[in-house]
Length: 199
Image (cartoon, rainbow, N blue to C red; front, top):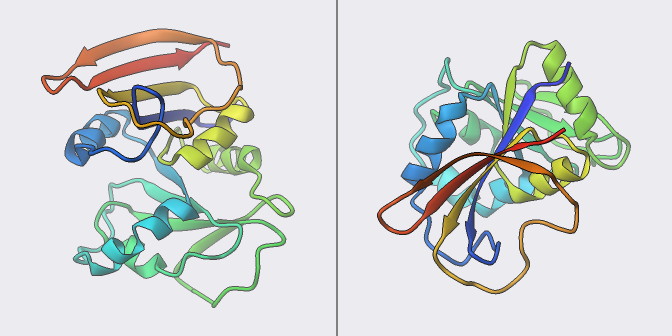
């Protein structure tokens, strides 16, 4: 049985995920309510923050924290030690495909290889479920798009910011039937809307 998959995104009113300020403390405080066992993210998101990751203090792995699983088909991530030592996660898991290029050996980073030229997220979730993982939180819109296309998302939360950005929205034409699970409005006009995905 696969884990329960939840996703939270900060978006503008027109569905764009960048180009505006996000209160990260609030974002992650709300995300922590799911108490995920695994945080699932893509390599692009990690690489966009790599300088900050490398410069951050190394507090060491957090034993009670979730596992960080990174979809990295092209083996672009090199900051595994820094990620592991940030103090947020209990460890890191590199998600590779059969055709992922050769990478430097790293005895301390666990690997899971699924799929041929792309990571097979269905198999990833099945493996994690067999290992006792109950909740996975998706933390990047690239992985979320894939999970939505594969009908793998069980809950969706949007932190909607009162700005119009213009640009490509985080969603595509995939149709989802959603059941409203709650709404909270903050003083700055940000609205936190939560949905369960109807089956």
